[in-house]
Length: 317
Image 1 (tube, rainbow, N blue to C red):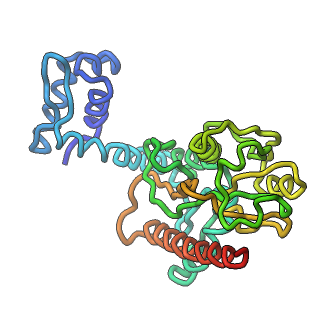
Image 2: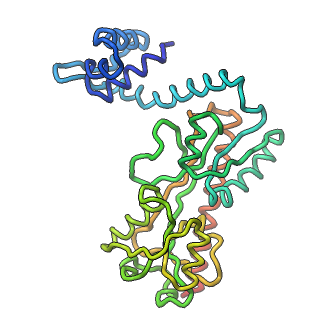
Image 3: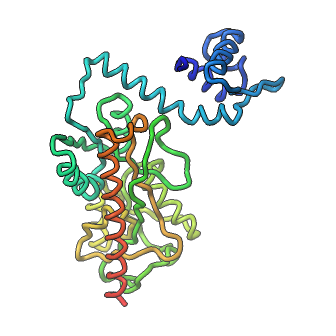
């Protein structure tokens, strides 16, 4: 067993690039930092850093350990919070923070299955956006949080553990009488001159980045005419002929009858829906079981979505 406090020192060295810089950042002496690393290496029986005149860098063993540091420190912090609060979480209850479309589509079948598998367990939902959900997770106020990220980009939520649940494809949403509504797939480039209706979130959120990336890949800067808070409102604006939009499949699953939902041709815009926890749940634990059931629900929904898209394409053809 090793002193987890020494992980903080190792993490800071890796961030700063040298023992002296890490010492300055932590208000330690360089000697004290060196002693902490040496003690950690002795406890683990392996070399964690390569030291040289230009600084220090992790060895392969050090890099492996650093991958686990956020989960280890997160679990320790969560335990300390629970003890300080007298263990505020009620036994037999798992609290999940979720944004609206995941709560409406992915979680209901997962919760229904959970009631059969774990009949004594209660699931409580907290309706919040992903950023707020992760903040609740970090504060120990929920056990898990549904989040979205952009595939291939750096995570928006460092310091937590995530498990991918659903690849949420974005679909083109057109007024029912639009010139491209009869297509089974719509090339983004053919929408370059259209007015766009998008969510009102900042350009930093995953959904907006997916939209911007899709337009950039097609070679145009979109003209955004309207912003709406909810995807249901977005579809209402589209139905009224005020523009076109890109809507994730979780939100498009409840599409109106007066809009046409079509797959984007070529590269398919995508966000990843994942579930975040403070640390990797222990195997066979209640939380691990619940997360597994949520992941299973995501796979089943993905299969149904693909079948629905195929059926829609056949009807248009």
